[in-house]
Length: 297
Image (tube, rainbow, N blue to C red; front, side, top):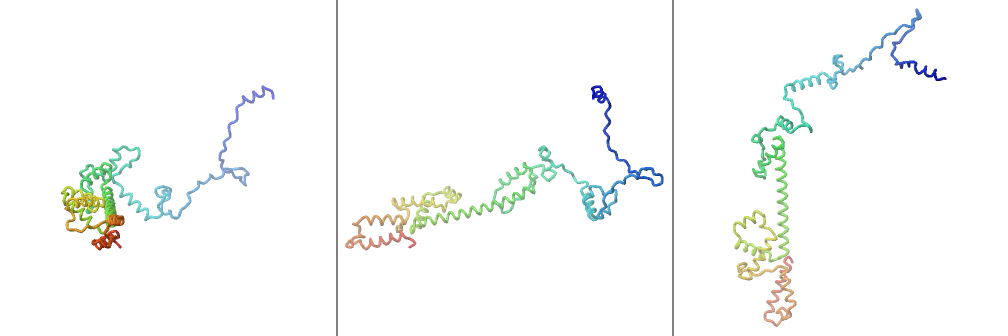
């Protein structure tokens, strides 16, 4: 093909793209032998649902009726919708809402407009003071917590606080019992005497302020405090006998063991000399020492 022919072909107008069109079906007439247009296609009807036969045909396609399959349910829905008419509507706030919009929503839900109108029902057996309740109410009001929600939280807190106090008391009693048991094991038969010494020191030097402090801190049965006061009492007994007058000395197992070791190391002791006039007394003393070393034996 030469160049002029190519140019001629390029310059010729391109044929428009043919778009297929729906052509009515044609039929051949037997009498005339001529093709004639057939009948127009009939629109496809919505499938018939026997469960929705009671809905007029022109309304069956409404989306608001799709969940109703019988007249009683439709009546219930209609009555419920009628009851909602006239209610005070509220826009639900979201993450883009302002603090004022959130506050307005909480006010419509029941949050009082003033703190003095915010009422909390304190459980009758609650173990917390009025100052705590007042401060808690202020914080709940600031946090937009509704009064009924605040009362539920307060009830839960009171119950949780009671459980915590009960557990604390149980732990305290267990600690006291363990401490007294340890003192009895350490002091043996001298336990009562040592406790009496501790009480005598406290009675002599303690005042109302000291007694209040001991009661407030629950130290009346504290093992360490009893040991401290008892030790003070022992020194006082040696110096002026203000503690334990008229009482025979009772040793702790450790003290008795130490005394026995001294006798063992002193071969001149009356315990080892049968001719010593104090020999029988020494025998009794050693027997007493062994009783102190083994208070439960």
